[in-house]
Amino acid sequence: MNQIANELSTEKVSKLLLKQSIPAAIGILVMSINMIVDTIFVGQWIGVLAIAAITVVLPIGFLISSIGMAIGIGGSSVISLALGADNVEKAKKVFGNQFSLTTLSSIFLVTICLLFEEHVLKLFGANGNILAPAIPYFRIIIIGAPFLAFAMMGNPIIRALGKPTYAMIALILPAIANILLDIVFIKIFDWGMFGAGLATSIAYAVCGLFILGFLLSKKSNLKIGISYLKLEKSIVSEISSLGSITLVRQGTVSILTIILNYSLFKYGNESSVAVFGIINRLMMFIFFPVFGIVQGFLPIAGYNYGANLYGRVKEVLYTANKYGTIICVFIFLAVYFFNYEMTSVFTNDANLLNQTPNAILTTLLATPFIAFQLVGASYFQAVGKAKPALVLTLLRQSIFLIPFLIVLPMFFGLEGIWFSFPIADLLATIVTYIYVRKEIQKLSLTSSHHSDL
Image (tube, rainbow, N blue to C red; front, side, top):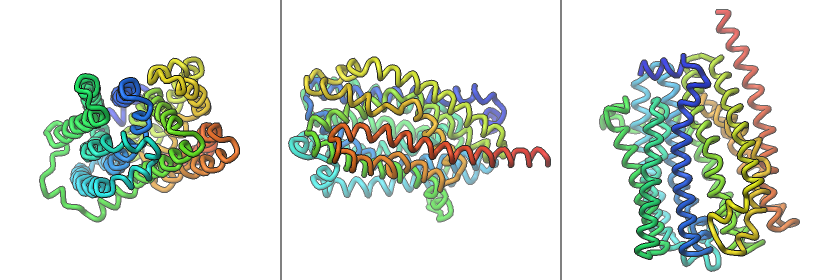
């Protein structure tokens, strides 16, 4: 623990951020390649409806895993603050409660999904011809979702413990497994959508079991016994306060998915759902370095805030925004010049090749400003300020985007759907800037007060 404390509190911020961010970014890259390859395989080997089916089903699986993600990110923020205050016993209790909460909640949600299978699929947009290929994929994905929930719970904890390389490996292993199994199950065995789902579920299991194995081993520095698994109201409340931010965000994503898939089908058809499926996978891939910076930023900001090192908190906030914005500018240029080539990787369908490039460019018009919004919202979560973190998280995907998705298509059809994204991004960035500017002023005053003492 002393070595971790020394690194997080004394090492040069830019070097530390890179050290934390690069493994996280590589892990996210491999995970996104995993998702992209999955979509490429079903798009090239099964068809357009297969892409639409994956677009509908995966958000349901991720809704279940988001419980684990919420518990993981909320708990890891508490763990970072506890370690910053040198309270190792509390960190262990938090981890034990995270384990119990993830187990109970994921089992409950999987049961609900299996009991009401067709209703759930239709709710998330399995309309028209999409339902038939979605059913076999859904059944097997849902069974693997609890493993993904444990993976999402454990990965932020590993980073909070100062072990970013292990967090990276945890994401690389399932990606490799999924790619290899996709080739075997879809191409060689010709198992279609069931094969695609089985490959993904096994990959989830590989990831979840690796992370749990690490956290329960001596390497994690969080050795716990059965007594730590007993839920404690105060700890659950603290985890929930911060984790609810992630849960609400992911829950909002689910609501967004329902509205989006409904609008895409209404103002377009099954192909329009597939178009967004390609855009969504592409966004997961191209933004991997920005997401890596955000993940690397969280434990550094949380630890130094807990240790009252406010000057370092400001420095890492500035550095993360600078690096993230530079990367986003390059991402936008790549999208501007190569949107057709990006589309052709996923499909050779003439209709999709005609629709998708322009939709990609329109959807990502506000890319240069996205880093500031992501880092800003994450900052408040990292330092344990749940209310502003929740507000900033909801801005883009709820307060701004959902109303635009409902209203703009009434006047502009499919184009209205695509333009909703950059408009929401710009408005969310403006509000985030206002929040962060006020917070920096507070940190400056608090830092000078500590210096006077």
